[in-house]
Image (cartoon, rainbow, N blue to C red):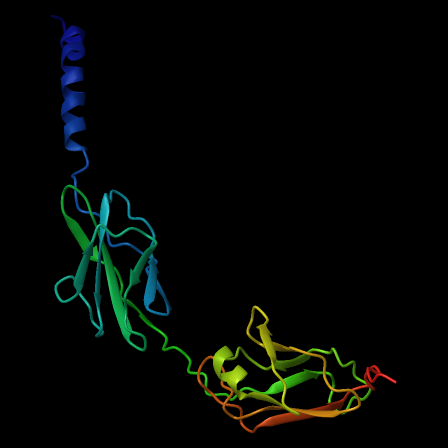
Length: 231
């Protein structure tokens, strides 16, 4: 072979050898970035940015700061977003996440934390905000219904037991879907030209067990009833 022929024969071998020199070396993924934690009642939702070359992720958590891959409780196969549930309200949870591939597991991310909120306790007593018939009304129809609106959802059984009228009546109760409006329908027409007092005692409670601060009463007077006395 001449010089040019020899060069042509050796060139492909040289290029192949150079290609081997510049082949990237496989390695574990870098640490994921953007790890964030958002708490809700009994759970924390975690999200992070994907890592190049990653085929999976491992999440680590602890209730103390400084969580690492060694000290944290591992969650293998986690994907973003990941919901960490079954947690204790009022507790702070700390997290790191790492990426892995066929080579191995990479370093952990920066640590984040979130405090699972404690449920708010309702300690506010309910109140009556509206009534029907309005307090002090006269000439109310003897077939009227009686309604009370409360400031919050009420315990139906306790509130019905706390309800009374003077003169005494019997009747049935109905509630709004929100348990804030109680409607009482007397079983028979009310007496004509009679003052009625409706009372809800302090035994009435809301759905959290808070009782009325004070008993509530209002009055109305019925119209003259139909004359049913035979001559």
